[in-house]
Length: 207
Image 1 (tube, rainbow, N blue to C red):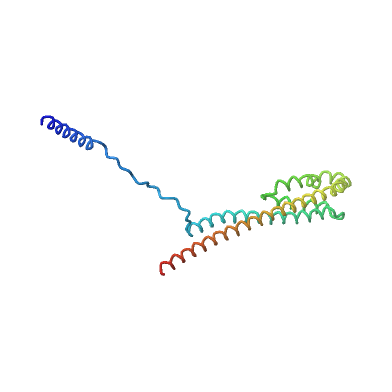
Image 2 (tube, helix red, strand yellow; image 1 turned 45 degrees about the vertical axis):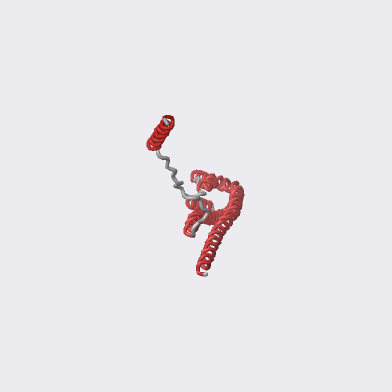
């Protein structure tokens, strides 16, 4: 009887101790993840925004390339005319000088200014020599006659280089146009697929 009472007291004390420990122990809370699960879904609005951003840069590149091509073609035509002028024997020195100066003025502020200046400045130095012309007209004309053939060759070579660069630029323009077309077609296909899927869901709901 005494042994049984003692055991009951021990069990009660152990029970009280367990309850006290449970009350004092910190409560463990398992929180659900706050991030949303990843999704491959792209809304039509997001697709249109992507298309607008992508093609805007492409159209800018295309405009720049086309403008450069137009300037290059115009320069090639004018330099070709200058080449013809240099090749003609009966043209006056003043006509050649005026043409060179006019070409230098047109090239100012363009992407080709440095190249045109390097090409035409040596011609200008020979043509624009009033002291030699005043002192010895024969020597002045002899200097022009000795150089005009070489000037024509230099102009012809430069025009040929411009034509080559323009052909390469045309390839770039065609590539950009193709990229714009591909991006537009891709967005169009994705939007059409999204619309088709939405129509299918609505049809299933109605059914």
